View 1 (tube, rainbow, N blue to C red):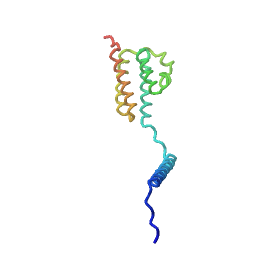
View 2: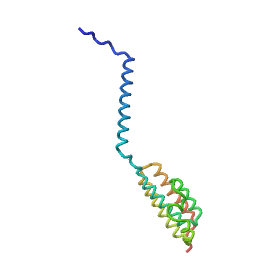
View 3: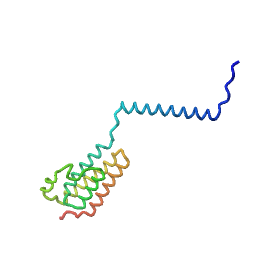
View 4: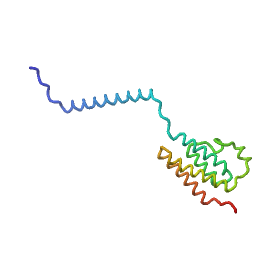
Length: 153
């Protein structure tokens, strides 16, 4: 009669468990490498939204260029979105320098439209931090609108 195997020791059980875990980890690393090389990495779903927000803020910044508080606010917003200076995306500095000053009514209209856009964009954002950033930008514009002088009647 063949000899019956002895009981499994604790040391042997731990060694087998570690070997099994290492084998599973190796399979996972191999699968990740193969998957990464055959599939294209998905683009950030908010890239288009950020680009659109930069375009809209830049356009508004051109309209309100003669209002220092709003110009500084939009510059800070563009900086938060990692965009270039205000004049680098939408309009050239020479175009804004030659345009006549915009009236208070147009400034308010532009800022209200931008505020509404930022609220809607914050709801479309996939990223929580981006949604909060866009919503806070909208709130900042709302605060500036409350202290902005109204058009003369």
